[in-house]
Length: 248
Image (cartoon, rainbow, N blue to C red; front, side, top):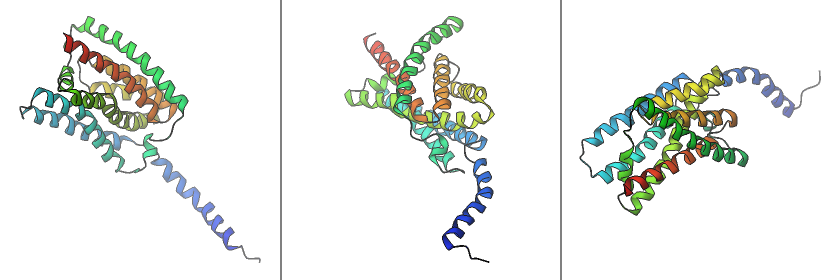
């Protein structure tokens, strides 16, 4: 009986091993409930407990506002980092993968539309609830601490926080829930995202942002187009808030 050449033997071993490896890989090829629960718990601890402790320090309003603008990004990135280390340890499994220029441009367009829709959503919320209290006014205090403070606050609100939120809510929550279908993945993650912002006049804006970014993530398979949506959504909102509060 002729012997199989060594290089053919190696290929044969890989082929025979593949069926037993592939099913196990598919079981953990995307995040699940473990990552969702751990990620949200870590976020809640860092975000809400951290903010409550900051209030006790009696910081200058500008300093306190500046720290708060960065806190969402800090909390979400910490939560995402812990969740990534649980099982998968692969950023691509969380949607951190390359995307096309076309999808980035789509993200810009979706962000503009979402920004417009958000304005109507907030007006409808105020009409129904009568709640005109803007819980994010404190962010404006951070922006009024000087030029450097304005630049840092803008970066935290427009880039840093959206990055952390896209990794946590779309890379983990939307990604995991999509195993149950598009509706559960997009709407379910949007509800969680909005509720984490609280029941206030930011809630309708969070619903619009959540739906837009989750659907873009579902279709593109990458967090980067959703991040573009989020940046376009946040940046003009924050700049308008700073402008009107500083001239009011």
